[in-house]
Image (cartoon, rainbow, N blue to C red):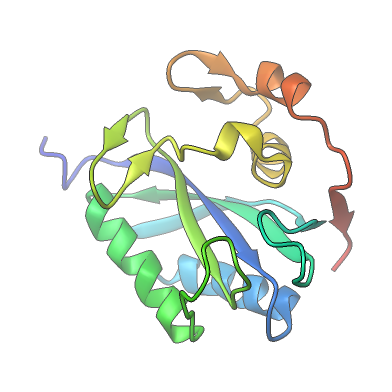
Length: 166
């Protein structure tokens, strides 16, 4: 079985703080469910989080999706970036405001470090708005290399992260 035909479970982080962020994330869930060669297996609740980086921007709306895909990692990245473009994503400022941000957090058990893609996402273990929604989907999740999400949650408290009822 080649890499392109292998089914892998992937966790995708979703974030938005512009142009009705809850609607942006909700629409992105529907668009992820329609991606070719992908199946949306689960989605977390929607959360409100403080911005990372520049603080002179609106709070973020965040969530996590679990996909199963036969796409290669870069093909999935291309598909996610195409969805971001449909949401008129503009990359002006690092960690700045955005209509939609889609990040590959985990791609199966793969460890990837290329110019375009790093998996596991390099900051995921430090971000409560990633870890807590992931744990909601799978409380037994293991981050490569062999780090239980329960241990990561202890080191990354919920803080001001707030689950939103939508």
